Image: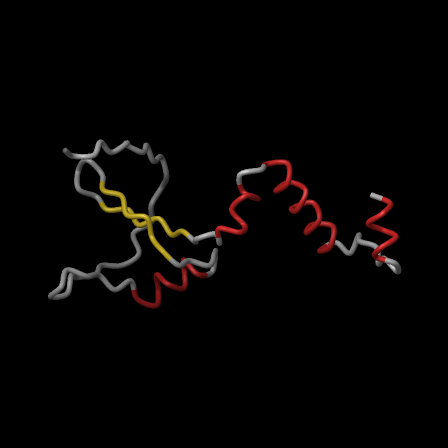
Length: 107
């Protein structure tokens, strides 16, 4: 029994960057130019491969989240709180706590 695959509608502009050929094992090496374009935006450890109805191939760079951190991305309010905290730290709007135990008891 063949699994039913869900179609993903992608509405995005693409820039032609380079031409690559398949090697004897049908692999494509992305090369430095493409790797630099991708790695400048995010830490990439895998690619989601999608094939269009006309045969176009889209490689979407992704990164895995460790399972112990996945809960954060499933909890929008917790994720928003972490992002606010990181922004405050970046803007140096944080306070140094002299007594950590007292601070936690006050929460």
